[in-house]
Image (cartoon, rainbow over all chains, first blue to last red; front, top):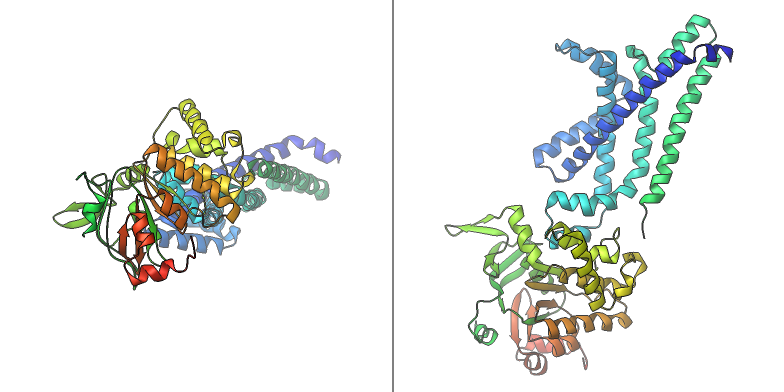
Length: 213
Length: 267
């Protein structure tokens, strides 16, 4: 274990990248998913068609393929991206597609009578969504959304393949240098687990708080 | 129609004016030319078998259902459309919303917001739509809850209330908007029989004390007899007969109404 403590600084720098990448991905992916889900349900026909194509295609691709596609594809059309940016974009698109489906399903599950009642009070579309539909959809959307967050934290480890200095990258580098892989991968695994366990627990706590009545 | 004068003795412009209204679902024509005027302060009970179009008619008045032909005006404003050169163009969303705020609706399934307390349900419309200051809206909501006999249930969530209590909160929610017209869509049909009375009592008091204009789709003949200023019988998507309750319910002219009423033995 000594080898872990000797290199803990490097591992924490890697962890920091992993957390930043996760946070960026979850925030932008959720924003995309929120708009995507609403667009899938209420957008004009062409918008719905485009979103449907985006969601179905991205959900049908392995995350790594998407990362490579962006990392090698964007430079091919003259857009220079570094590993971190390519990873963040790929992960956000991936999360966005999954969250879109979650949001669509969550909103759809709110009884139509609730929308009638909100309309009858004189609420327009966005206030209706914000104050009546979304608060009722949120409890059912939370568990699958937490799943996506956890999947995204784990998914960030794939950016190691486009040379981003994340937690797995740091562990791999130290493991190669010291020729002692097991303790380092154990340490990396422990850190991933701690992060994801914390997310799951906060999710469960939020779920309890969001339930009403 | 001959009943226009009967409905409008003072020659006042009607609060709700429905003219030659048609509504289709695909090939099925649910409303086939409805003409109906409702005067300010009138309580109009609409009766008829299920499928007669009465609920659809009510939902057209606040444009929860778009209509295909004919016109509806509420207090002089055309509902859901703008007219130019004889053509109807869909009205902008804000305009429809403003009109809906004036025509409160109470639903068969209550449709209270489950994530809000009773008080919050009642104060919600005024706060979000009328932009009433929160404090003021809450005080008013408490008063309205007391008026429907639920002053002590302000902090309860809908799931903690009985069906009758939920429906009374829904009536308070509708009253909170100070609407020009209140629409009641079979509001006691989903209730256990022992809870129907408390809801009808609240509606009766509303009709008697407050002079609210009400359109009430109902199967409660007793309520229609006691509270209605006019009863309208619909069948097959048209108004077949209308008039004072004692006449329509006591001395029906058409065979269709007689057949319908015969199913309510000693109402």
